[in-house]
Amino acid sequence: MIKFADEATIEVSSGKGGNGCVAFRREKFVPLGGPAGGDGGRGGDVVFQIKNNLRTLAHLRYKQHFKAKNGCDGEGSNRFGKDGEDVVIPLPPGSVIKDAETGEVIKEFVTQSESERFVFLEGGKGGWGNTHFKTSTNQAPEYAHAGKPGETRTLLIELNIMADIGLVGFPNAGKSSLLDFFTNARPKIAPYPFTTKIPNLGVLHVDQERDIIIADIPGIIEGASDGAGLGIRFLKHISRTAGLLYIIDVSDDNCFSAFQTLSSELKQFSAELAKKPFAVVCNKLDVEGAQERFETIRKSLPDVMVLGMSVYNRQGMDEVRKTIITLADTVKNTKPAATSKKKKTVSAFMAERSVCDTDEIQYPGQEQ
Image (cartoon, rainbow, N blue to C red):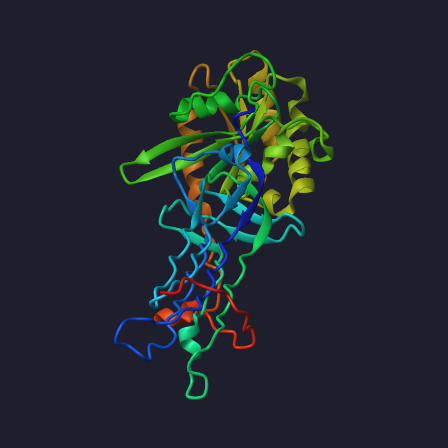
């Protein structure tokens, strides 16, 4: 439980731009050398990047402060300062970046491509050296620009697991057994409630070209939307799924009201989550009297797809597998890319420098 972390608060800072240099060219046989102060380097950026080998945010629990390097100051002989190094923060697929104070969503990573990089804070621009301020009336300017400061922000990072199908049910309903049967996941299975304490993912192999990811979250109990139990905390991990499977234990006398209770808890947590395509799977048909309960539930829900299965004796498993594939095909779990204004690209090196003409503060450099 400790190793699974789906939330973390971190502080990030971009680098400060280097100061411009005040220097003059002084060489033998060069009587009119003039100003020769170089520009400061650009500060490093704060960059987020997806890493598929990460599954939780545990690495952000041990390091909460990330700061990019500052740009180096300019030097004499028109030497530019070195740009500061970026700080790259790795995140698992499905991560959401929010402002810690306002809760505003800044960025959602809804793909698993490691090529996806997000520059959150840009480093400060480097200041101009005194070379830029030489004029016919001021041939020896003794001032340069300061580098622009970086920016610091506090962020809340949340993890919403990327999955196609989510399993929802009461504790000990058989969700972990179903995941173990269909996928390569090996969750803890025991004959008592609350054996699942963290979300588990498994991959159902459909064919050589396609896989379906199934998410099993801790069991939900009545009153979960008011904070009871563990399941409501992890419901966000099935918010991006294409469909849901409600797993009902028909060996329990309370099975007749299970679907209504579960759907009510999901609706109170998120109306959008409750609207997802779903099917109801009645588990443990091998138990005495379970078949009769299953038939009663199926008749009480005429407009709902109700299936019966038993992981113990493999009854109905093929039909459940087909239903999982159908649900995954019903809704393509892709969101249109957010439209954003195309950033103006500037190829000139000087465009990366600070050019505030009103900020004429003197910063001495290394004269040569």
